[in-house]
Length: 390
Image 1 (spheres, helix red, strand yellow):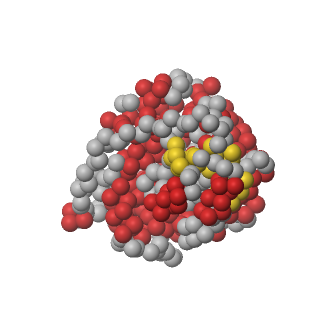
Image 2 (spheres, rainbow, N blue to C red):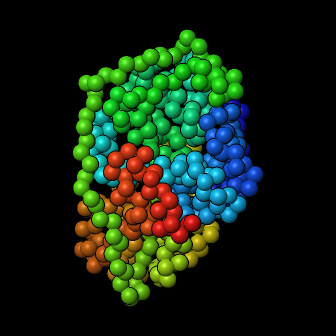
Image 3 (cartoon, rainbow, N blue to C red):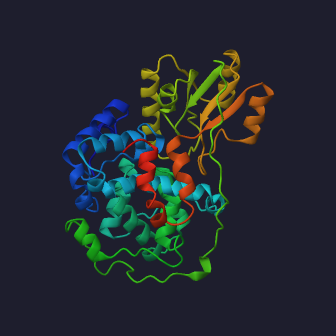
C-alpha cells in the first residue's frame, strides 16, 4: 500500500472547514458523474466517491449541509443516486432503532473480531491490507469482502462485522450490522449477496479477477433465520427547552456539531467537548488516531468549551457551572454511552436533568423506516422539503 500516516490523514482531514472545502470541490468537479462511476473500485484515493462517511457518521458535517452544497449546482433528479446513498445510512439507523433486539443479538454472539490472514485471494487480501492501513474501503469492496468472508471463507458474519467495527473510520452500528446481515441473506429472508469474479473484474477495471477462487453459488441456511418484530410507532418529539440560561451542551462523537445546530435555534448554553479515550478500546490505532485528531481540532476551534474525558469530570463541571440541564446528542441503538440508567440517576441526584436531543433530520425520517428501503425512499422528496433542502 505504501501510504504513511501523513498521507492517510490528508485524505481524511480533521478540520471541518477542510472537509467542507474538499466536498465543495468534489461537488463541482466529480458529483455529476457519481451515478455512472460510484460502483467502480479503482483503488485509493477513491476519487469517484465523496468519502464523507467518517464525517457524516460523527456529524462533523450534517446530511442537510452536504445536500445543500450538492444542490447548489445540480438538480435533485440528476443526483438521485447520491441523495439515496445519503438516506441509506439514515434508513438503516431508523430501521434498527425500531428493532433493538437485532443489535443485541449481534452483541450477544460474543464473536471476537476475526482476522482472515493471507487467503491467497488477491483482491480480498488487498482489501484486508487497505482496511487495516487506512480505515476505509469502497462500498462495493465492502459488499464483495463480506460475501467472500461468509460464503467462501465460511466465517461467521458476526466476526466479520466485528472486524469492520474495529477498523472502519466510518463504523456505524446500524450500517455495519445490517449491511453484513444483508449480505448473509438475513435482511430479506434468503436473499444473499454473492460476490462473483466477473463482477469484480468489471468494477475494478481488470485489477482483480478471482476466477475459480470464490463460492459463487452459496446456499442460504434457513436455520439461521430469525424474525424480528418491528416496534410500534415511536415518538421522537424533542422536549421544550426551559427558558432560563443554565443549560449545558455536551458534544461528542455521536454529533460533533450540535452546537451549530442549537445556536441557529437561538439556544444559549455552556459548552463541553467530551471524549473518553478508553471507550471501545478494541478500536484500531487508525480509528483512535482519527477520532483524537477530530477532537483535538475541535478543542482548538472551540476555545470557550470545556474538555473532559470521564462521566465524573463531566458531572463535576456541570455542577460547578450550576447547570440545571445537560443536552446530549440523541443516542441511537449501538451508540449508547450517556443514555445509561446509572449515569442518568447520578445526574438527577445532583439536580441536573439530561436531555437527549434528536435532530429534525432523524426525527422526520425514522418513522418511515419501518419496512424496506423501497417504501422508505418514496418519502425522500417529502423529507427533503421538510428539511428545507428543496
